[in-house]
Amino acid sequence: MSQTNLNTSAIFAFSNLVRMSQVHKNSMHYRYPVHTFGRLSPKQEQAVVEEYIPYMAKQLRQAVQQEDSHKTQVYIRALGNMAHPKILRAFEPYLEGEQKMTDFQRTLVIVSLNKLAKVHPRLARSVLYKTYANTGEAYQVRVAAVYNLMKTNPPASMLQRMAQFTHEDPSIQVRSAVKSAIESAATLTTEHNAELRQNAQSAVDMLVPEVFGIQYSRSNMTDYVVRGLNLGYTQTLNYIGSEDSLIPKALLYHLQGDVNGYRQTEYRVSTIPNFVGV
Image (cartoon, rainbow, N blue to C red; front, side, top):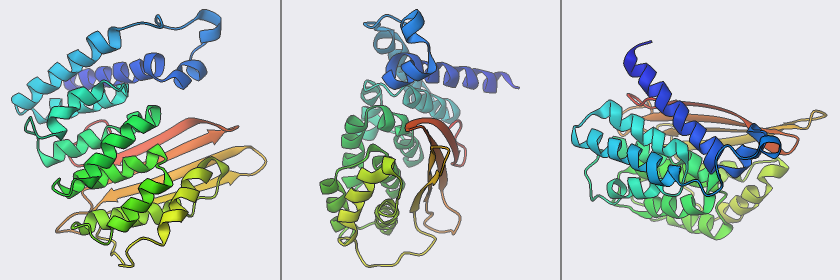
C-alpha cells in the first residue's frame, strides 16, 4: 500500500470512529459497552467541534486553494463521515458559491452528506431540499441532493411539492430522479419503511406523466423480509445520468440490514470517476 493510500485510509478510519463513538448516540450504544465502562469520551467533550472539524475544514480549504483534487476529495469525505452538524459550516462557502469549487466537487459534498442524513435527518433535509430546489445549480448536484433527501424520510408535504414541481423543473435529469425516487419509495413493503411508503404514495399522482429513458438519472428502492429470521433489508440503487452518454456519471448502491427491528448491517458501493472513499 502506498503512503498516500495509507494516509487516506487513516483519515477515513479516524473520521468514521469520531461519528460512531462521539456523534451518533445510537452507534455509541450498540457498538461500544458504554453501560459497562462508560462513554468513550466525556459527554461535554468539545474536541469534535473545537479540534477535529476545524482541522479537516482547514485542510479542505488548503486543498481547494492548491487545486489538489485528491486531497479535496479526501477531506470532503472525512468531514462527511463525522456527520456532526458543524460540518455544514465547513461546506457552506462551497455550496453557497462563496468559494470556488467544481461541479464535480460540489456533487461530492452533497453525496458526503449521506451520513448526516442518517444521524441528523431533519437538519440534513433542510440543506438538501434547498440544494435540490435551486434550479440554477448543476443538475448532478441537485440529483445527488434528491437521493440523500429520500434517506431523511421526508414528510408527505415535501414529497408532494417535489412531485408537483416535476411539471416545471427545467432539468430532465432532476425530473427523472424525483419521479423514480417517489415511485419506488411508494412500492416499499416492510414495516420499517411504512412512513416513507405512505408519504410517497400521497405524492405519486402529482408526478409528471412523462416517461424517462434509462439514460436519465434514476433511483430504485426495494425492500424485503427474511421470514422466520426477523431480518429485513432495504436496497437502494441510484445513478446520476450523463448528458452525452448512456454511461452514468455516478452509481450509488446501498444495502441496509434490519436485524430484530434494529438497523445495524450496512453495505455500500459507489462508483464516481476519480472519487476516493465514498
